[in-house]
Amino acid sequence: MPSLKEIRNRITSVGSTMQITSAMKMVSAAKLKRAQDAITQMRPYAVKLQDILGNLSTTLDLSENPYSEAREVKNVLIVGITSNRGLCGGFNNNIIKRVNQLVNEDYKNANPRVLCLGKKIKDAYKRSDAYYINETLEPVEDIFSGLNFDNTTIIANELMRLFTSKEFDKVVVVYNQFVNAATQLVKTEQFLPIVPNVQENAGSGDYIFEPSKEEIVTELIPKSLKVQLFKGLLDSNASEHGARMTAMHKATDNAKELQRSLKLSYNKARQAAITNEILEIVGGAEALNG
Image (cartoon, rainbow, N blue to C red; front, side):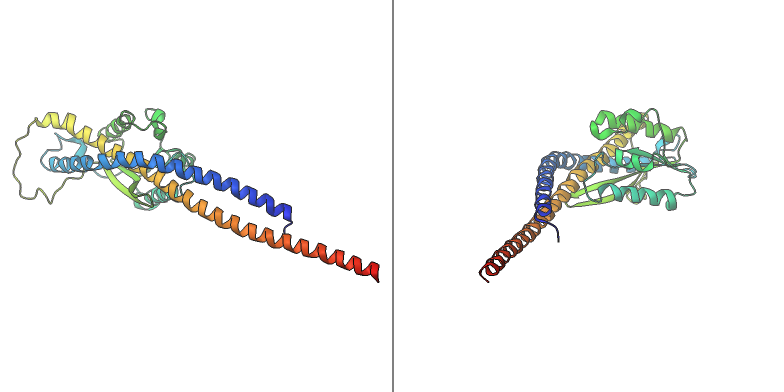
């Protein structure tokens, strides 16, 4: 049985841990509010723009829209999005498991490469043969240290260049979609080539374009792709804070329960020590009287 000193030390240690987890929970809750507002405001615009993009892709020729060119998949780029920090439950591991599945199963015959956005997935893949190094993107790989649309634009432009130059035939993005503070869904979205909305446009005729097709290809489609990537990053950012807040809430509750159990053990051990001391005193007194 542990000594009273050992139990006291454990109680103190658990109390310190509980203070840390409680503080992290409150910090994550504050950050979650801002991140949740950002993705809530962004999502309707991004979804509508993606629908428009899918509709346009069915009416533009491949020569006019290089971003919709579907070719034999010989090289695949998988963009994995995780956080820079841990202590957020299965948030990062779920993404890494999904990327592993894509690399080892779904695209194992398509020379899969992994572009890592976030330190956690980079730590998991930096020694792997699938790890993709791009000098242009190295300054923004740690994008969550400065998450904004300008940094997202750098990444999206490079992904579009890699696709149109035929260095990669397909680009897939894997991220956590924010549902609520306790729920995140692992999403695997095809970034390039653009998937047309065939069903919605079945039997439709030619469109009169305003602005022109050339302006749509050079301005609207790249902008839409940048917005889609930014939405994924905002989703992941909100999901991270939600997952960390939930994990820290559970950790705080567990620490309270453990502290309560340790205090009960401490009181029992202390009572047993007092009882033994009383018995020794009584036994000594009887020996003297005898």
